[in-house]
Amino acid sequence: MIAIDWGTTHLRAYRLNAEGSIQSAKASPTGIMSIAGSDFETPLCEILADWNEAPDREILMSGMVGSRQGWIEVPYVPCPAGLSDLAAGLRPAPMGGGRRVLICPGLVCRDRNGVPDVLRGEEVQIFGAIAISTRRTATICLPGTHSKHALVHDNTITGFTTHMTGEVFAVLREHSILGRLMAPRRTDLDAFDDGVRRARQQGGLLHHIFAVRTRTLMNELGGASLADYLSGILIGHELGSAGLAAPVLVVGAPELGALYQRALGHAGIESELIAGDVATVRGLHAVAKLQERELK
Amino acid sequence: MIAIDWGTTHLRAYRLNAEGSIQSAKASPTGIMSIAGSDFETPLCEILADWNEAPDREILMSGMVGSRQGWIEVPYVPCPAGLSDLAAGLRPAPMGGGRRVLICPGLVCRDRNGVPDVLRGEEVQIFGAIAISTRRTATICLPGTHSKHALVHDNTITGFTTHMTGEVFAVLREHSILGRLMAPRRTDLDAFDDGVRRARQQGGLLHHIFAVRTRTLMNELGGASLADYLSGILIGHELGSAGLAAPVLVVGAPELGALYQRALGHAGIESELIAGDVATVRGLHAVAKLQERELK
Image (cartoon, rainbow over all chains, first blue to last red):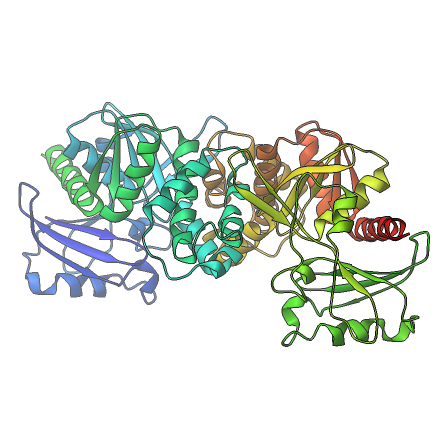
């Protein structure tokens, strides 16, 4: 099969053998935001071109390609949701040449106050991470622009929350007075730890981030360390307000994932790190296998 | 005397009689950020020009004009600080023509964890508000780009906290995905109240703000109401994490002040609203009177 992760800013394709091992991988920056009109077929054919696939090989996709801004809108599946609910929610994209392209649904849940939350793309990574870890119950933390925390109980996603940590970090760094104080970043894990500790103190996030300014003003922190300090405060708040329970699987890019593991360590929570792309591939393969079995 | 509030983006001058009543007022957009080189004297002379003041009339200033980026840097006075500590911290600016120009110091404090906080300009408003309210003990809340909460005990500022509420609101509205969903704002106090309530629920600020997106996606909230919903979430977090104790004096612009009073009402806290400019003038007059008395 061909497994595809098609997000806002990227398109990644993996050619898998029957066991789900990656035979080859390709990536392009043609995220769904860069698609001219609604021609999703051209960039897809381009990335698949030199693999010379047999046209009956199934293509399975996840990510924002299934959103309102994507190729087709695949309706959200409500939680609790198992792998079979994902498989049942797959929708075919209008691909020419007789090729079968299926797109995974995202998930929707509501908290105890009835406020909705959504994800798209992470559902596949969550099931992939669960499969890799060989656990059936865990908390999955997917750091990023919009971090997700999902609760998996007995192989079913029971609920999740989104935290705008990465985006808030980016807008504060690029557009606020805090960013103007920052010198080019030099990794400073002590400053990061300080930030995580700050997040556990009294006063709230809107107060804590001002310490980026005041500690610079008082010469307690250099400009090159401020990004890590701010990052620690924000990640500390994300993890603190979520009240994650072990076992925690952190799924994402290794560098950011390691920072999350470090911050979890402040709260005495041990965690396991799983690379995001590996989780995606494993999840898509699991959906494909399940769907195949159900078709038989 | 002449009372002057010289901030980052504005210059406001007030001509007061001996009792501190405003005889005339002028304003210009020549904030300290717009000063060419270090020529603070020209815009000051321009704003005072047609008052034809006797040159021995004292000029007292507060605000960012006393910061490192201002006319002269007036050192921060540490808390606890009374009005006499402010008067003792006044520093003369290098004004020509034999005119006496004094600039008020800002304040610095440290919380129980040793993290510093600062303010500049608000110290005068706090003492002004206290004088207007005829209370000697109160919590003063000054909403704005960087909101300040100060504790005044027996006419002395014992400590304060800064909350970056206004700036976080602005950067999220102008630069984040939340802002891109917003239609031109139409005041929606129900949405504001919803936001304040959201801030009191589980999940933390980084999670709560994502509801701006999900509730739009689910057609529960219109684009024109999103700014008020976001504002409610942020102000709710500011006030919730500060744990303000009555009596609360809200000092600031009437419209924003009224929103803060409304949000305080959700927590059952009654408050009194005092206009920011009135508090500034009253505070500067009190400093001037005290200083005069001490010179005698």
